[in-house]
Length: 208
Image 1 (cartoon, rainbow, N blue to C red):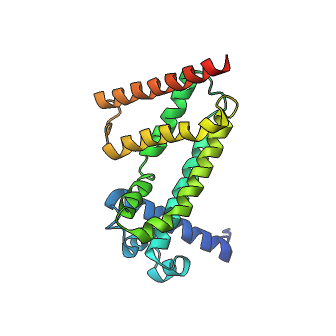
Image 2 (cartoon, rainbow, N blue to C red):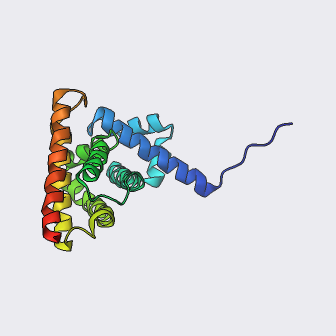
Image 3 (tube, rainbow, N blue to C red):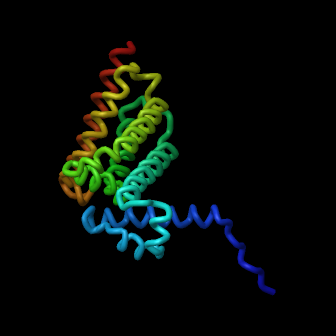
């Protein structure tokens, strides 16, 4: 006796199509770069027609910006569920930085690097990305507040986060450690620990 397959609702089908398009766009950006991430390439990877794509995203730019938002939201949520709340010690802060490093260097996060580089010469894309960048910053500050609000002065929370994120973004752009086992990778691990030591020692002194 066989059972009939469960039919998805229209809303479920729509959500599934959008998710497939966003994931396919992130994969195309990571593997082929901004210029080669055409709507045709995305549709071929997602198994979706271009007509269906344009029903959900009126332009290629709208699709790219939505993908940036999608990747940011997923990365922040995964980071929040991975990292605990006790980050008072150097070891704990180093672990947090290591998790952030993994997220920043992930293939999915290549979405942001590709779009930010492209936006440098494309004013329309740069303007379109502003809300997504502001939303990402708000999410990251919320997570940083959950981790460090009891230990860092409110005025220092955003600057400390900026130091950490810009350091990790610099690693991603310079590709210092393609192989974590290679000497550059070990250098980065030591750099993360030094950064953790500086953060902890500074605020331990202020709270004494």
